[in-house]
Image (cartoon, rainbow, N blue to C red; front, side, top):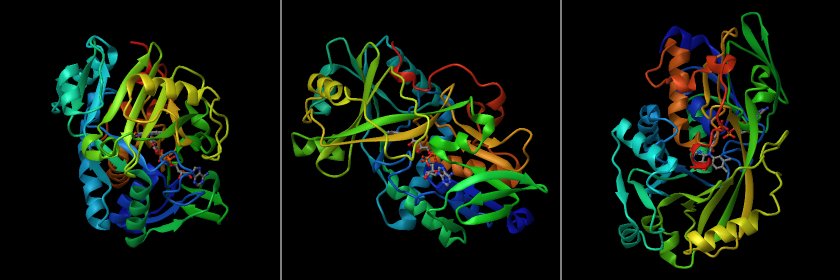
Amino acid sequence: MNDKARTHRIAVIGLGAVGSMTAWQLASKGFKVDGYDRFAPGSDHSGAGGSTRMFRTIYPESPNYSGLLEKSSTMWRELERASGLSLMVSTGALTISTPDSVMVSSTVAAAEAAKVEYEILDPATTLARHPGQILRDDEVAVFDPGAGVIRSNAAIVVAADRAEALGARILSHTEVFEISAIGGGYRVSSSFGVEQYDLVVVAAGGVSAALLPQFADKLVTRQLTTTWHVAREPQSADPASCPLVLRRSGPSRSFGTQCALDASTVKVGLLWDRDDAVSETDGFALSVPSEWEALTAECLADLYPNVYPQSVRTQTYADAFSKDGHGYVGELPGAPGMFVATGFSAHGFKIAPAIGALVTDLITTGFSPLHIDELRADRVSTADGGTGLLWVRPA
Ligand SMILES: Cc1cc2nc3c(=O)[nH]c(=O)nc-3n(C[C@H](O)[C@H](O)[C@H](O)COP(=O)(O)OP(=O)(O)OC[C@H]3O[C@@H](n4cnc5c(N)ncnc54)[C@H](O)[C@@H]3O)c2cc1C
């Protein structure tokens, strides 16, 4: 352990996907960590709620993420060994569209660039290998064999528990109201009281901008709606025969499906071009647009017949979206000791453990081999353009 680790007090604000992993990693290096969450780590109020998240090894958002994905994959397994729980279940993933679409071409390009294994399947091969996955004659599926489903709430609970076992203090049901610079460090005011820290890591997800004025015009809180559908056959909800699916379903609509790992349902997320920004959220009581059920049912009846189209559960969760669709990770320019890890724009869960390791590297040595330009925190002064949802945009 180096001297910095022995002496620095660090506050991690937000113990969702990224904060819990960061607290775990910092505690493992011997830092004195206080982790704050306004609910409890792993609660359904965070952006990682709803029990599961997709893990993909092919990342069309940018092939540069491959190091983070590889590191995360190792760390999910490390958390499994530490807890004895199954946290990541292999299923593979199918990205379905026409061969010349952005969705397919960017997926193939990302796999090639990152040298990740993949296959392009025609409709007959897809149906033979993945019962119920019916492609139109003009469509293909790009198969990512390394993809799977992560038990999101459970993974967060386990990471926070590891952090605590390594000496971190976990302050659940403790909301942080303000962070202010004082005497070369930071004062954190929360429902627990006022505490002084050398360093702060803000990982407050969808509501990070409320604590970081620099991000007021850089991050937007968006809500994403998830529905759960009962499988028509047992194998359609069995991870062994229920690959993740990412699929276009209209000129400006896409949907994703994943095995819910509950033996009976499949989770569906419909995305379409609409204004889904929300101004304030407690991360739970977000409203679902009235047309949602009908649009989802129509899309499933047409393209995903192995589940009943009417949902048995509907829930919304919020995440912070940046303008270019990439998160912000690192020390803020002009604010020494203030680190951020936020803005993951609906694809942060799969890389969360690696982000925790990355932040810990930066704090410990000022450098991380995991860092990529897409995630630089100093973009806060320049980032612009994009929606953060590459695969929902019209082809
Ligand atoms: C519906 C949906 C589906 C998604 N699907 C996927 C997927 O399949 N794969 C994938 O990789 N990613 C997916 N994502 C994205 C991923 O879940 C998020 O990017 C990730 O959870 C972000 O992690 P985070 O730590 O930044 O935020 P969160 O996980 O939301 O955690 C933030 C935490 O901060 C706490 N907090 C907030 N404010 C305060 C405060 N003032 N004081 C104390 N605590 C505070 C919150 O309670 C929360 O626990 C999805 C997101 C959504 C919404």
